[in-house]
Image (cartoon, rainbow, N blue to C red; front, side):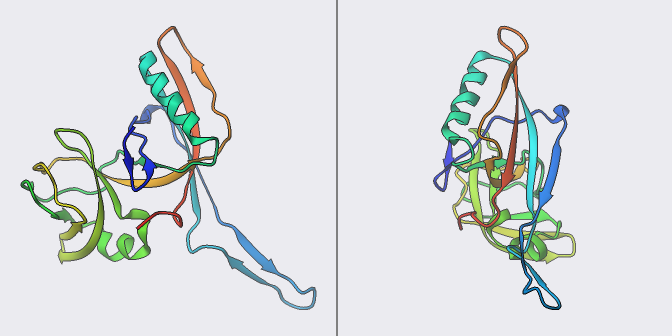
Length: 203
């Protein structure tokens, strides 16, 4: 199983046709002396996002790999990276071997997401030889239509303009058990609830 910054990466893509159950919550503390007004303070700047996704395993080897991943989580204890597997960034042009800066179509990343902290600074980049994991170190608007991002390590291969670039989310399971539903001798489904850990993302 691949790892990134000390955490496993779940590279098995969930099935988008299985539906996505989403929820969000925010912890807060209330100070009420019992006299007059009271004060409420949130513990974080952003709500915590939770999702339940479906994984469809077409082979027994896929079930084995997913089961080993679930066992290694030790319930809710051990965090992991879950890529969005979405086109979160679109490259304006292809890049050559050794590139470290990417020109992306404007999406507000440099003004909204990058300054917010580490939670959206880690990327999964598809490559001809597999996925690459990189961390964005700088981001700036290039013009009204594009932005430039720089990653921490140069690319070992050229990256095509149509390459899938996705955010990596640090998560943990939101249940201590998981149910594998067998639909046949080789086909099984697993629904896993998880929550994002935006304040525990490494730099």
